[in-house]
Image (cartoon, rainbow, N blue to C red; front, top):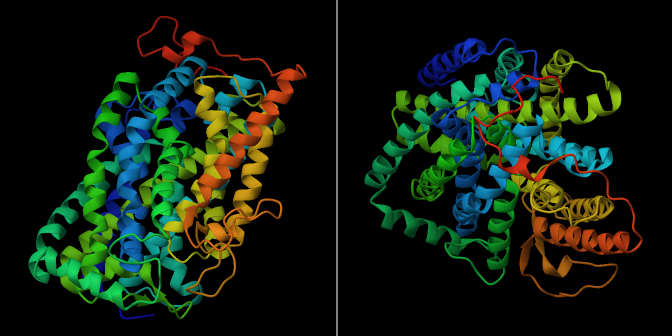
Length: 548
């Protein structure tokens, strides 16, 4: 165990204690008659207003990915890391109308998860189960990314031993998280998100004013970054994009935008809101977070100019690039402010991890447990099962860290994106049309998922020498379609998620045409056209907490 940084640890501990208290108190905040119902435990009573929804969705989407993974990517690869800016800007106008329809039909029919909607839209338990399993699997690496971010902070504060002792502080933090999530449900991260966002805004505003003054201005910072990348041998890093990674940048930004609100935790934040006007205001205002993201990303270049070096992970013996931003704050700021910054990163990891575990638990309970294991489950049974599942799901995130070892931690999220994109036809497109046949959607899912995972499996990690799951960027030369290589010899890279999604859509369309020609039954649609436009205050609106 390295020497502990006591000033930072004390401040981190006090703020962590504050959010822990808030997590337990949250069970009585805006409480309904009972938490023994998924509407209350898993969706906060479906009554969050504009401000709470703003902080909840912001806390849900801007995570350790924002504070640790994006700056680390800029530090290691340069311009490619800026893909996060256009993708968040593209996402909000792209999902504005679909999310309104998802909220309305879910509110009208009592749906708790996107898989509930698919079950009602197509009358297919098989398709709904595939969507549920996909959501759970895609969430695992995203939670793992939060673990990586929190561990980077703890390592910087001195908890950098190998073996069990090095992971003990992280384990304690997640046990506490699991307990207050179990007790308070979605209200816990919703309340804590206020503290998280306040800390992050304070830290970033100070950092973007102080660091350029300390390092000689932004001109010096960019010059230092340019000099560093000029000395590397990698053809895919640099201050500017090149011919090999421009397509990857574009497809990564677009694919990430398509995937963002397909994640079950993003849908959970949306369904917890009070009405369509709340969502309209939030989709208009949430892009303000993209300004924050851009400023955070630049910390990767600031770390280069400051000569910051990643800490060596004592468990692996390799430099851990995820410690770049924490180490930058530790090197250049007073201990008390570094402690505040570490708290912002740590709490910024815990809030989304809680929401993600709740969303995955809702999927398990509604679309697997109730569908196949206990059809007569009462709302109280469902809530009890979801609480237990929210504990178990965190172990899946730990497994992702053990079995997936990408070059950059951000690839944990991008690999999850490849997986969740395969639900786009059955969730997002189905909000507007039932043209796709349910067997076409199932066939497309299998092809897209199998091919996407196969491509990911064959991507090596050049940093560690491991041959599999090393990232999400695929050289077109490696694109093999039943032995045919249409781009043989090309080193141009593309995001695997887009390749798999195109295959999914093509297969779904072909099978749909065949199924329609053969007049294969396409299931029963339980939704009505009017369901997609209901709003709070409408007459005969389904009561919150009603029996399913």
